[in-house]
Length: 322
Image (cartoon, rainbow, N blue to C red; front, side, top):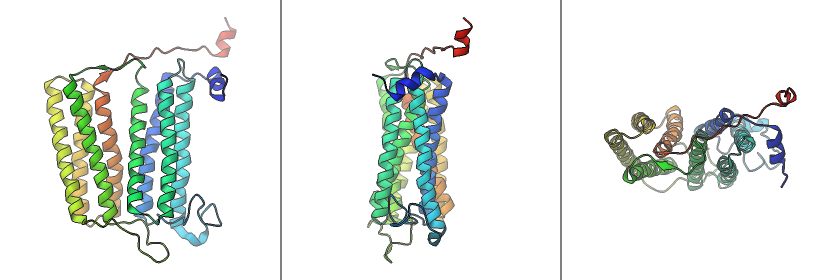
């Protein structure tokens, strides 16, 4: 069946390196959108645009009367289009590559629909006056996008054969447990945010932004407990991976995760005892995306796929000379 994608694939043949660059661009933008979303909240610009999908009931873009908050919120919305462009590039590159990377194309479309769903969730956060539970779902959805983007990038460096485990099954299960605990750590962080400082805006219609009705200090303690558990599991993984002589990439990745967790833990404690200054919270949110992405990469280094066969397609000028 002829489609615009198949027509493009007949005329454009990106290299394997091009596909990897496209997948990396989508990953970078998925982390950037987490950071800029945090900047919107930390500058109290969450309601800079008072409605969605338009910025105001009368205007698609912010008006001068809305000030800097409208500009910040609208800029974050526009960055979603940059993210879509990066994801689109990854989809098209995977589709046009010879041979067709069907698995990468599917993962690219998963990223696209995650972006679309997160845009809708972002709109709901505005329409609900920054309901903290919806904001938490917004962050979790963004982390799901990071997860799939990491998986796409790693898969772009592999072939499409069935995965072959490089270590015993219990070691693989340990890596999955580690990813799950880090995921819980991220979710707990969204609840701490929802109950604590920086609601995202002064409020709507003169009412303050509603916060999660749970004790902030207890949520922070639960979050800290998950930090200790994550660090402990990561340290155990470092020792176990060394003992069983796990692949070099897996050992390097688990050490990287340990360094990121320790740095994030220090930042979190300083943030808590200094009343959560905005700059530190922004670093903490960006660090959460990096940590989750680093954790996701660990199980991927514990299996192998047959390297892809790169087919060099001659350019039309080269064909004419033969």
